[in-house]
Image: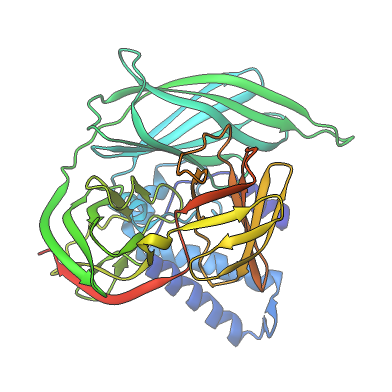
Length: 431
């Protein structure tokens, strides 16, 4: 059964369904399983798992004409499909038939790349892909991807991200500063995979593949000009505008440079409708661009473009903030000591082989990199060959690491995030 489910899983990756429909279907399946006494205290038996999935699938097909219509577009959908979760904006785009089917494949060597479909708007393009091969592959990925227009000019993107969703499917997301003018594109990428052999030694397969496709933007953005200033514990935040497009929402705001605290981030900014439903920050991708004290600073939220709320508000209540004259770390790298930490939240400094590491007591859902620009004691920015950083957590601590190349013994690092907050509820009506 596991093998069969794995085979079904590989057939489809771009279909989605409303959360409440899936929840209702799963609940119905679970209730039926309970009545048949297949449910166990600490888990679900394989029989019940299959029963729940089958009941869910049948219920969704019957309950959702949109889902059924999407199913009909793809071959092999008479079998069970594992659905892939998207953010709420992408879900709504697919549910409202704004997903453009491409279904074009090109084979080079042993690798085949298929562009399954695209969601695009004025400033964004999300491309759904599948990699396949007659050989069994592992560690499949795309590298060095680019999109060009009919004139061969590369799409000038503001941000680009890869989101693999299983071993051979995923998305590539492009977002631009300027509106995307073209409707005809060429997607070129290096497709990489490792051939799985019986002896366990894998040969790497690598091919450059290009696919032409056509994708139109048929939706205009929704603009709200706000021009409002709010205060949280005396700190001013200016909200300029909110722009909603099918793929994401852009909030243009900035913190006042005259604040006596430096605002580092707004943790819980969201769109909220009259029912209390929220569209929060992007979960997997670019969350903001610029610095928060820059008037061009932008925060990105999930899109509610296809909703028609009676009322809509921009809300937030929790801001990361530190006193302006204390917004830095000071480290003694030789003695591995923290000389300055504004609220003494970090400890256990180590510096070895070009990597600095500090720890903090774990705070649920807080993983923001605290490391900003690296400075010498005269305040000069120290250029770095690499800018790598990472974090890891266990039940008690979170450890942040930063690659630092320097001969200086004592350095300062400006804060880019910090676990200290000011809090006050703000709700700004947009309509």
